[in-house]
Image 1 (cartoon, rainbow, N blue to C red):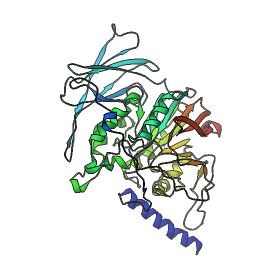
Image 2 (image 1 turned 45 degrees about the vertical axis):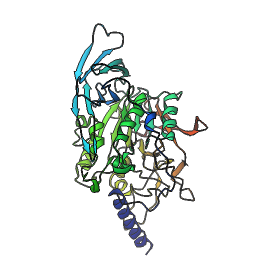
Image 3 (image 1 turned 135 degrees about the vertical axis):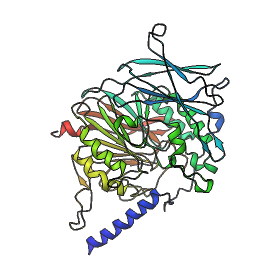
Length: 455
């Protein structure tokens, strides 16, 4: 009888998860909303048609290409990126042209959105690049990652649900001033929160792009899409999901044989990073399912020992907000994560912070009643990092008592640093925004699943 009752409740919760993924309002609604910083906080750069919203991300699977993206508000051309290796500007100045795209959303028309891929870069090398209009030239730089290898150190920042509020600004400033310097950012979804404004005000995409430029023009952010990127609004006759996001934020999905920019993989130093989409179909035989089924066995842990997954809706969450919304995806993919010894899963969505123990819930079936998570050395650590700043306020309604699968949780804004040391060890810390200083509130040493536990 108890088993049947649990099964019925599981079915109900899975149905709730499906409804939430479809856009139905959650039972738990925040009462106090934050507000975006005024547009004057993120002004366009001076000059006619000046390139703005400059951002970069990895442009291939290995780390030898970079996608340079920017917006020109008035004119299409010039659509050229000029770049050179540090110290060689006068000798080896190279150029590549951008692909140009635009879109309309209800009563909004975008500027000219440029995406240019610089190829055949050298590993572990600093480059300068310029984007220009006829009157204004803006110069930036980036450093390519080291060649993939098992003991190559690398440091990531981790941010989710950023938005463009005063809290968002504190998060980004704290990340950029962190003594442990991140070299790239793993971003767990929910960017501009334009859809939280009347008519999905797409000018908020422009202000967000200008807000983050101070970081993302200089180091790649590895993007994943959240629910606030869906941007469906049938009342506005806007029925193309992810339209603004897909026009603005290109990723190298084809390099990993993905059929969608919403799920893909890259290598970076000693890490293999897999991005999944919580808001795309993932049931058996769907394109995302088939892609992940083929992707995980490909990973060479002797080259990239650390396997990191980024998605948006957390699989383990002890907050009433969005509770169990990721459950159906967990049921689908968690056995693979344990089988292939995924090290860490980063999620957003819940606007607070939580780190799990290494646990799994893969033994349950409808006859054995084994329905609770258990400690599992082969399982990932699940980290909810939806605490970037958002616009909807903090998620401060935790379930009590704290479940034994939850190692640390706190309703505060902040960011994290993942500092990969070698094939076996990585140092992780979460820093909250408090008293205008980043305060280390949670930290842990992670031991690689593959090399620490027998391959």
